[in-house]
Length: 303
Image (tube, rainbow, N blue to C red):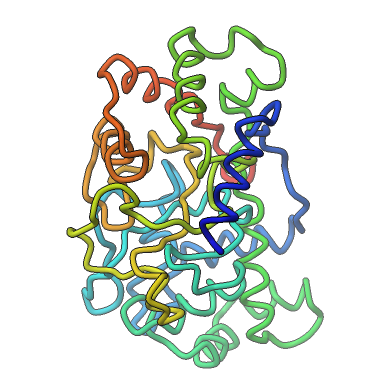
């Protein structure tokens, strides 16, 4: 059934006028987002006060970090490459295997994951209640004592604010014909005609479906079984959430296991594994140029 739907989507996208749409801001509460921003960079949310959300999601660059696997409390190494937090509010599921239904579920799971924050959320709430300034900040918003729902909500509101607007390609879609180079325009046409658009489409250019990693070439390098770890269904082995390509130039290393560090290599892998075809170097270069045009501006809340 998944592959029937995939081909229906493929046909629709190939014949649609424009399969990618520009980013727009999404509504969020400024006061809650600002408090969430503060907590995002505060290690108080981890068991031993050594790890914050910003440890794995650097807000000054691509919203991820530049290592293959991140480290949690007690120096424990994770098993998946950290995805970007930018535009994550637009993903239909969270995590590579889609085990979190939304940002709230994702935040809760990270806090209690023994390899990441490694704490009980109720213990974090107790620490926040004893802190010198957080009780007042939360009370100013909620007019009551800090609760776990409040902690999750302010973190989610902050993530909702992290939309990277006005990428050159978005400006091009809005009618600014000179916003991107001719090479990038050619790369976009190749991106569509070669089939990349079948998985990377919509306003987040991905993040809206699952797909198997290794459709045309066996995926023998990945230790993770992807979606299978959640569903235990045989057909979900090596199935992952398709990542967003926005700001992709800033988010190396690539793939769920961080196996390559250059966009060129990433395009080559996708060509072999997902499309099952060879591509000329000049065409790969053009697609890379298009991908570089997807880098948006730092969100207003971070400026």
